[in-house]
Image (tube, rainbow, N blue to C red; front, side, top):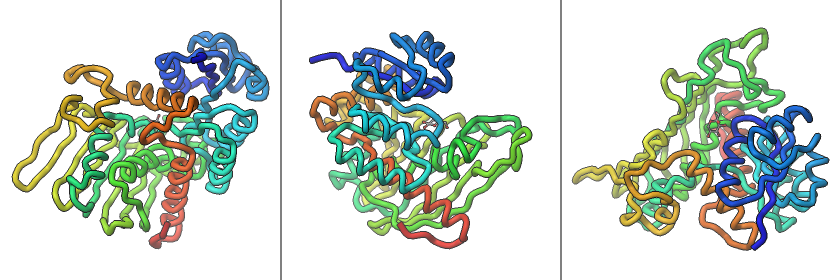
Length: 357
Ligand code: SOE
């Protein structure tokens, strides 16, 4: 098998995470392009790429590149992912896939028509215990889903002085907290339960009307009530101004037989609640379903985490480029789904009415 040649567009935190995962998957780190030729050179040095390109167009002329990871500000995703596909390369595009639902829909069509692999890093799907949760819902062990409570909380934008391109609607899109992290929460909920949100009523809030001299038009927090196709009801909360919560996605789903609770800050256990008694299930490959066990790269007691999940996502994406069809790989259609839910959240928050999906 020939070694896959990888390029990254972007030079920030996510570019580092993607590059580490690409290296772990045995790929060749060929080229990187960033916001300027200088930043591209710097990123190539820091992330260990062979070379840099002065622009995305130049990067796509590189015959050694087979896969491109798009890790740029959100507003650039759609155009760059479309250019990558048009050049005949496989693409991994950061979420949100696009800041406009119609753009996301066009990308799904383009990807499907191309026969190329096009994925979106909903990486929490790659925690072994998330797969275990999914396997139990699929096997019917949990019964029918009745209620859902979930939250995704961070505090890195708590202060009025905290700035990031995501805050700016022109670079990050009209939704910030929900598009950035609420999308993970909804993806995980639908992935685990196989149930889909059909209607929601949302409310958003913005703690700081200004950050520095810039007015803020994107939400710091969003709360929503939902109904699902299967008849469950639930509530979700997303915030990027929750003191002390660094990056905590917590989800609890009750079925008619049992409740399952997981927390990404404690990814080595999952809570299994039953009327007759509850337990914390450890990540022990010997006790897990095959899809969960295959993601256990180290034995129980040796903690796995975020980068491990990212590595597994990238490894599965690369496997798909050689014809495999890995279970649970988040593709562009899943990115579009997140965009549709995000749009519904913004619409409901603006009108004060329930929005159907
Ligand atoms: C920032 O909020 C961020 O890096 C998100 O963009 C990621 O998707 C999430 O996994 C961690 O937090």
